[in-house]
Amino acid sequence: MKALRMLVCSILPLMAGTEKSWAPTPAMADGARSARQWTSAQEFARQYRPILRADSIRLSDSLAYQIVLAADKHGIERQLAFQLVWVESRFKPDAVSPVGALGLTQVMPRTGQGVCALTPRQLHEAEHNLDCGFTYLAQLLSRYDNVQWLALVAYYRGPYRADQVRALGLGYPENILTRAAN
Image (cartoon, rainbow, N blue to C red; front, side, top):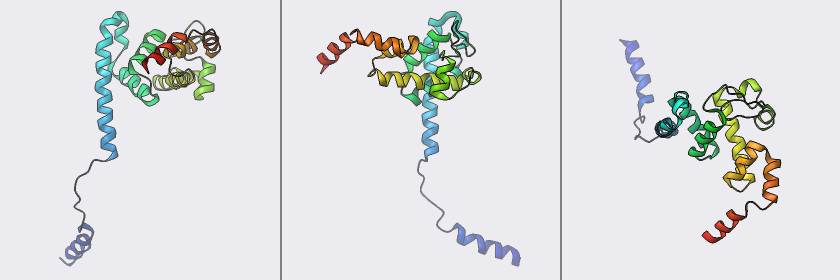
């Protein structure tokens, strides 16, 4: 009995003032954001599956979620992210191009090493590949003032080729349209 009273007496001061009003925590905000991303990923997957036909079986909800997470992390528009992955690999994580580009976003091993410090083996892992591909695309979008088609030229053909295209003045229509909108 004495031991019980000592235990209660030692716990009561610790419990005093522990009742706090409820407030959301950062973990709850992260959970809500993750839930929104999951829902959005499923919506994109549902939207793309009819268009993809035979390739649709590879676009799982899980892969769609990974694409959304990586795109959001790097500020890439989700639609652009899905289109890039479909065009580059048809949603095959183990895709290898004739020139040696690897994975979902078809990152060249040299680019993977230079931009993301990844090995060719890591480029076959969906999470690493998406992160690296979208890191690179975000860098190119920044370099080319968010002109998507020019950044995609650089992504596919290399920055040297995109710089040549830009030097020829092929960004001229965008300049005119941007000025007219202001």
